[in-house]
Picture 1: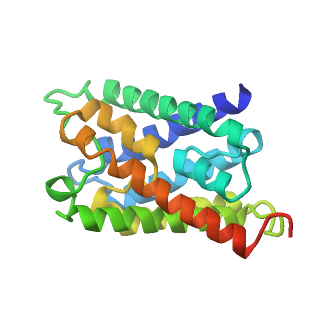
Picture 2 (picture 1 turned 120 degrees about the vertical axis):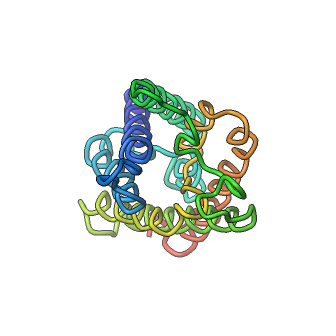
Picture 3 (picture 1 turned 90 degrees about the vertical axis):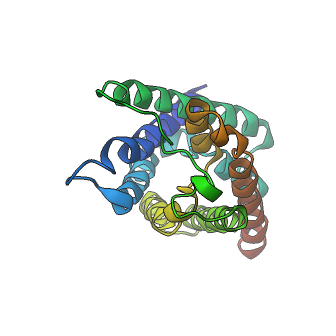
Amino acid sequence: MKKLIAEFIGTFWLVLGGCGSAVLAAGFPELGIGFVGVSIAFGLTVLTMAYAIGHISGCHLNPAVTIGLWVGGRFEAKDVLPYIVSQVLGGIAGAGILYLIASGKPGFELGGFAANGFGEHSPGGYNMQSALITEIVMTFVFLIIILGTTHKKASAGFAGMAIGLGLTLIHLISIPVTNTSVNPARSTSQAIFVQGWAMEQLWLFWAAPIAGAIIAGLLYKYLAPNND
């Protein structure tokens, strides 16, 4: 239960901090932080939680990460579903708090609410194929970073920094394409509030990250089994 609470809190913070930076600060006149600021914010949420709850739950904060670690032989099958449920609920809670804050501004309009999308709902107008490739590849690389930096032979104490910076770079690359998911819990939390097109396109932001994570888990298990 302690691990599940930790995952709930961590995913809550990822959504509130990352999506919050996009909804509340990215487009603020003259002082907006833009894509770069949002990318840094997402990286900081993972970086801070890695050191806050990493020793409790492993700080997955992401169903794709949990599945990728399981496929890579780093996580027990019996804990996969409870972790995913906690992450999705934590993300929804984070989006709920964000909605309460954002809706307190006069003239508030929900808009995209930092949801992920493709086609006309992609920030750069990228089609479904581009979105699918982007989400698979970015999640694949994210899992390679996670599996590598948490390997028992890796330098101790630096995993959180590498993972946080890796997520920052992933956002810098892919925000224009899909608004960056690589995390089904993050996508679900925003889509629930946006409804309509966001819920219709949500399948891609579950399928693609999980596919990328599975490929990475299988490959890294071959390259460097954790029992080596």
